[in-house]
Image (cartoon, rainbow over all chains, first blue to last red; front, side):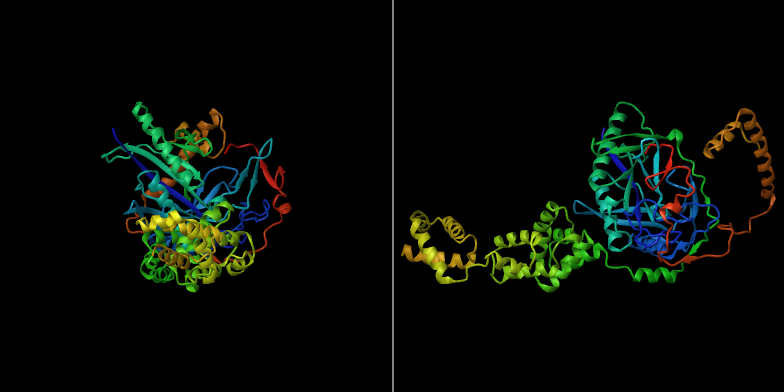
Length: 478
Length: 95
């Protein structure tokens, strides 16, 4: 029997506001514990929360970027539960009147476009952080409490681990592009929860689902869904029912295990938040917000293909991160060689970034440096091979590419006379190659070029060297 | 409207309250009569009345996104029954 994997996703993203959702405490990450608090986010009795204007602005922008309908009327609700990360014993969230409804996102799976439905997007506050470092208790840091979040809920339109990863990446990209969230997975500013179920292929009815929370990398997300769907299929084949539960994904062991079963399922007793008034947005305001949306990855990709003649693969990869796209655009403005720039950004630069544990935002040189490097190759100052060494130095040494070339004496030999002498000697020393060429084996040219490069330590201009080799060999044969 | 003892037990669990058997029975009876009283509202004809989404007629009360001065760590923890390393300390919970 063949099974189909069905996945729905809930994505929490912290918004890029300066202050919390209901108070003026800062949202900055990484400061000492409990230094971003006030009576409001500490949940003191008698305080009055006031909604941050920019939370609504950002959430509307996210909704529009994900093709949602923005609600003209929306309100906040209380979601009640007891847990020490929530001093008020309720989370201020949205229940039946979320800010955004019914969107759709197109993802690209094996060259095919597939729409994934967005059920809703609502605004809410983040909870605090629990630290388990104490020997006889749990420590609570309230700094994150009240940091604004959007929760994006998808329809169960996702089929399998790969689609889930692509969808998650697409959402991350969109939020990053629109400046709604910085989407730093390592800081938890974007978090993915997945609902996984399986069903017989061809059937309509959804199977019983399990939930896995806080998958903190795209790799973990993909692996967790792969593991969990396989586990469910094995259970079903054994004739065991799937239990609706929350499971914990252990990324080190690569397994999921039951965390909370339905037995103590939550009853949140939502009710309207009496301390906060409803949010109304007019059609004109929605229209204006729409007109202010920045260029989204899809549009950017299409433009790169049309304007810079980049292959789809390249355009896709470069627009997959806002910062990479920015680096590309700034470089191409200075040196109009889009394909070369794309190559550097797709191959050598990511390899160095990975090795040095950097990202494109912390790269130690600027777009004009990359432009200069490309111009050095274009002008014949250095070979493509030397350029790779220059790039390596650009990550570790000061100075522009030109300075690096000069400092290391890497400039190509432009002196034709000097090159001529070297080549004549090499041709003299390799009579077999000459006889190979004269009997029609053109491959021997490659060998000679290699010898020239060796003798000049890669500094010979390859075009010039080839030209001279051909001349010298021709003279020899005749 | 009658409330069963089981319902009382369930709701008290959600509210982190503990009642003995006698209290549970008493609570069931009293809550039932409260609900009966509130049920009087069902007699009102509301067919031509807009549902109330919120008790206030006001909307869109916002603040600007400007950082203020948060409490110092010491002040924030001043009322904490227990603390450690600048944090509130609570009985151990599992993640």
